[in-house]
Amino acid sequence: PDPGPVAGGTYLKLERKVGDFATVGVAVHLSMQDGKVERAGIALTAVGPTNLRATDAEAALAGSELTEEAIREASRLAAEAAQPHGDTRGSEDFKRNVVRVFTERGLRAAAEAVGAAPPRAAAPREGPAGEPVTTEAALDATERHDYFSGEETVAGVMDELEEKPGGPDGGER
Image (cartoon, rainbow, N blue to C red):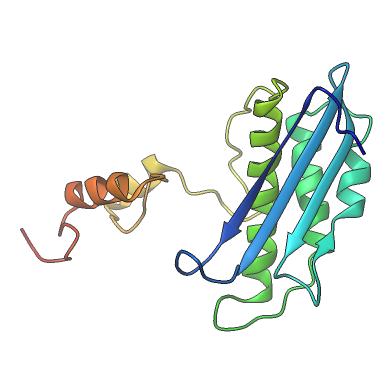
């Protein structure tokens, strides 16, 4: 079907190395009309016996405004639709969590592409299952240096590693 004039989507893939089979893959597509989701498509790869559609998540979005709450609920439903098997690439819980996170990111990216991105809410103090959310300030207070800020390029990661105690080779400086 014709997605209409206001549509966008993205595909997110977790892989061990470039060109590898997906550990988890999430494709998201949105068609918008009058500020609401006309149609949503959410497909999952590598988390079931075949590729899956997160039909409950798609249905939850259809006809609604794309709010933070709608994104979180659709992401939760997409994670529920996954049927992952634990293996050397990750446990079932890990893969479900990646589906949830990638669905959130994909929905935000698709919404931004069509100019319908919701305002970002402040980060919650607890995650979806009640687990604590670790903030950069909390990590700084513990003097831990084994985390990353989410750099998106190899150069950015290497620059960040250079700034951390021990540098990229882990040696003392």
